[in-house]
Image (cartoon, rainbow, N blue to C red; front, side, top):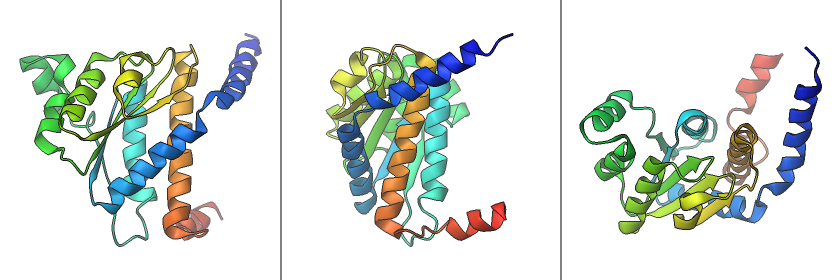
Length: 202
């Protein structure tokens, strides 16, 4: 095996960073911060790799962005509740797995974020459509041509790259940059986890 494929992928990933729409990322960060200030919920969802990213992001904001704050982020990944997902998929349809959960929990002070590399994942599309029908703020992170999610969402972070793995990499990078911006805003240059991380790496 030669390493050309590895070098090619890493070079393509590095070049793709320039396609991240920084103004839209800032818009999403602002929306997440305003939702936090209103004590609203941030719901996030995706399928497959995007689902793993959604789960990662929820973890980051429940702990990393909240530690040291009296008021905490309420960031909930709705692809993490396996019994609910399976029951809805089995009894209703897979396309309804996110929409049906939002009907239980979401309200006007909330933010609904959908991740879809293609932008056309039917269950994410349906959830965004329902949220908008309830006048709940929506955001989507997409790749390729943006698909229906980019058209529907109030805030569209569309990265026009036709490579699923790179799109998924950049979506996580987007949220890490947002986390950095928000923690600096709320906690300054010495966020609450700083001492914990410092102790761990000594």
